Image 1 (cartoon, rainbow, N blue to C red):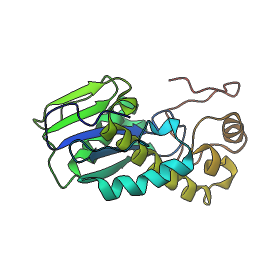
Image 2: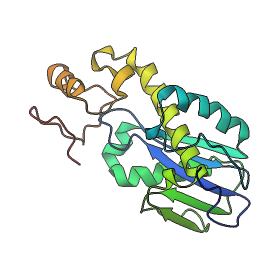
Image 3: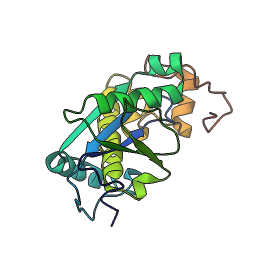
Length: 199
C-alpha cells in the first residue's frame, strides 16, 4: 500500500497532472488533501489502473478527501506558454481552487514552481509512492478523459473516445488526412512520417 504522508502536516496536498504528452485537448492538474494516515489499498498511479477502476476510485476520493480541486489549461494556452509553464499553471490553478489552504505540498515529478509561501517537495514517481499524489493522478486522468470523450462527439474522426487525444498511429493518420481541429496543440508539430510525438 502507498504511504499516507510525506510531512507531519495535517493538510498535505498531493498534486499531479494528466495530458502532458497529448496531441489534443487540455492539460489537467488535480490537487487532493486526504485525511492524515488515510488508507486505501486500491490507490495507485492512474496509469497502472483500468479505466473502470479509475472511475470507481474517483467517487471514493471525492467522498473521502478533505478537499480536492481540478484545473484545465486549454490547448491555445499551451501553445502560447509551452508545456512546462502550462504544467506549473495547471498545478497552481488546482491548488488555488482548494477551499482549504494546504500547509505542505507534494508534487509528482522533479520540477515545480513554489506556490505562494507553502513548502513543497518534488517526488519522482510520487504517484506510485504517496496516496494523495496517486489520488490527484486519478482525478486529473478521469476528469480529462471525461472531457475528451465528450469532445469526441464534436470531432469523431480523431477517435478521442479511445485515444483521449494521445498520438496513436490512427490519430496521427487522421490529423494528416483531415488537418488539426481547434483542440489540437499547434505547437506540437507532427511530421507525416512521425508515429511518436517529439517533445
